Image: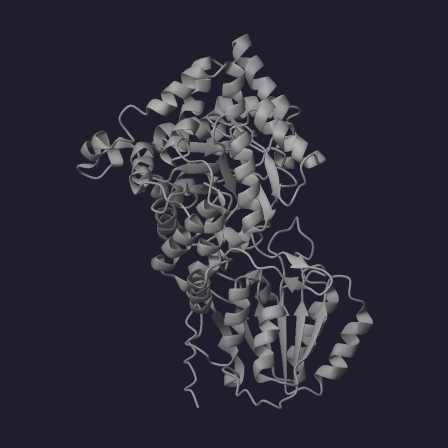
Length: 599
């Protein structure tokens, strides 16, 4: 648990907020803060670094949170990054909370300067620190709190939920030694064909994304962590996955101001500490086909000079193909620094990136003063976070702050308020819940995804003791679907759950023909049925004739449990879709279902 002085969080916001946007009296408060006056640790440290050591501070490699024995190849490589290359930080990936905390403590103790640790925590710390299972036996090993998707927060539509999600994310992140949640996503998902953002966004309305995103930012930063909005200047209207190739956005400046940039302006105005770049081409701003990450007109002209942003600019991962397909070696690192970036995430070779920056300063391509600008921002962030005083976390504090019941209940509340009923033919919902009824639950998921359907079916089985649960995936043969049709004819109810990824670079980003045909058969069969989407909400548009349809927005345990509870009227269902689902539904659509009175 973060136990630093809360004034440091205030200092962080004040020093990164443009002076013209500070509230009345804030400058006087800032000058009296012991953290803001000389910034002595930052300046002493900066003065002590060589050019190569400064270059190291810009680099953040990717690190797994798995157990690694001393002397293992992975251990030696990580120690090389920290001790020999002197990287400024790390991007933490998946692992258990205690293992991640122990691993980060070990690396912090071996680093000359404190490490700034970041992680993709878009749906809370559970986004990376939950989901591990012991095999065989499929025993869940627990972990951090996993919230529903941001679009679920959009469906609930309440800023207090966004703030609370940010708060809990910060508390759990700091408890394990992570300082920078790469969240929230501030992209406005106006394109249903977007293969990379989708439910990661709060929705399709710029004003609502701005409001909810800003609340999330405040929740994070008022509880000791750095919020990082992404993906600047807006990845919401693309139809290409930047992990695979470079997306092109052709909107003019007026459109960008009214849609894509609006949430970023609001969050920057509220003192957001960090921004992550988008690997997208934006010719209307850059005048070229270069990615925004490498564009000075975007990062310096638009973000810093026009929008007044004074915080840290993180690149998106530099190993993504949107970058590596066009820029070889460490050239992209240099162009990102020249464009205005401060932190280079996940370069293909950390050593080559550091060498390139140091050599560029020595050759005069990049001035040392420019390098100092970024290093000073990085060091100031470390000082504001209290890492100059205490860089280790107490291991015994992890279980007191991470995944605790109160946090799980907050995630459950988001899930309950987000459940959105789009169709309820013949008033099928809420279900009668006859305990001996013949009910079949069909789960479509990735073959390796053992958790999708687990919690949903568990709740169904509490009511339907004779529940028949079946799973299908992209490789399921046609004869299995034929068997499902035969069995469905004898059921009083069929529930189809779709755990379809919204990310095109993952497997099962769309339904196979056999699964689509099965749902179409149900729609015309007369068998009572419900289709629940736990992933891509736009998939519902493919099935206009189903009896009832529900959006649950994520495959998290909270969302699965809430969706099952909604079927039985356990609570009032009041979610509204924050995105249009053409051609069937508009923003704000949703059917309110009352809770069933207890018997």
